[in-house]
Amino acid sequence: MLDRMKTFLPSVLEAIGNTPLVALDRIVGNRPGRILLKLEFFSPGYSIKDRIALKIIEAAERKGTLKPGGTVVELTSGNTGTGLAVVCAVKGYKLIAVMSEGNSVERRRMLEALGARVELVPQAGGSCPGQVSKEDLDLVEQRTVELTRELGAFRADQFHNLSNVEAHELTTGPEIWEQTQGKVAAFIGTVGTAGTFMGVARALKKRNAAIRTYAVEPAGAPILAGGPVVNTRHKIQGAGYAQVPPLWDPEFCDGYIGITDEETIETARQLARQEGIFAGFSTGANVAAALRIAETATPGALIVTTANDSGLKYLSTDLFP
Ligand SMILES: Cc1ncc(COP(=O)(O)O)c(C=O)c1O
Image (cartoon, rainbow, N blue to C red; front, side, top):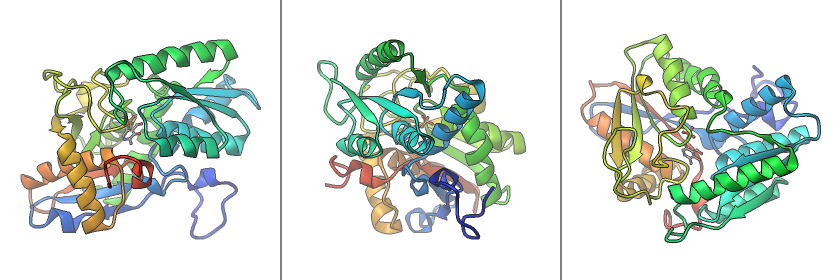
């Protein structure tokens, strides 16, 4: 691995990952546990998804499913698309990102700036702008399948692609282990495709089976916890799709935490004002859940979670009005 502080990098792809891990001591206050936040917006596409984009494309190149100059298609809430756009720009592939009209406009613009074609799918009847529901996602899936077939393209397929889990098992998890000198006590994460959660949980539990892992879900749609799904419309963009993702394996999860939109938003704002960390909705949910675990943790226990993306991606939403 190149040390970016000691040399120049051959491309921006070598700047993906190796993100800082920062203590949230101001928000945590006198709670016994200590929360460490991994700032994934330090990657070139400003999100945790750059890691999987790179792994998925590299694996497809190795297998020969993606040929030089080929076309990549992906269903995305924006972050995976942006990661793929960064990788495709450097490697010379065409990218078509299929996304719901319900995702924020910043994500769309950034994809286009990076040279991707964005295929926008109108929301299902009854869906709210800014909130992508399960019904919206089903429509995006249909369009993605059609386009991949029509174009004979390579579909990154983050919901099924094992490179998604592997990226986090080989990078995010080991980084957390090293940055805490193996002292991490718990990991907390929202679940979209489950790639982050499964990969990090596998990496950490392999090193120390006593590390606890907690999945964060929208309070109204605790599908992984087996609770009643009463409201699939929530603000945690990129996570909580009210269906069990194919990559999910409950064996690696020790507990579930339901978080409301209000807690998500309030915590994201607190994070900005008290810690100077400007992040998105799912980061707010992650930190809100981590605060709950910190309440009852043993003194000094290190609770790790991720800042999945930047607040800049949500300037058009009500997160920072
Ligand atoms: C902002 C944001 N948070 C969380 C997630 C969930 O991560 P994963 O798909 O690894 O479960 C995503 C996924 O796209 C995301 O975009």
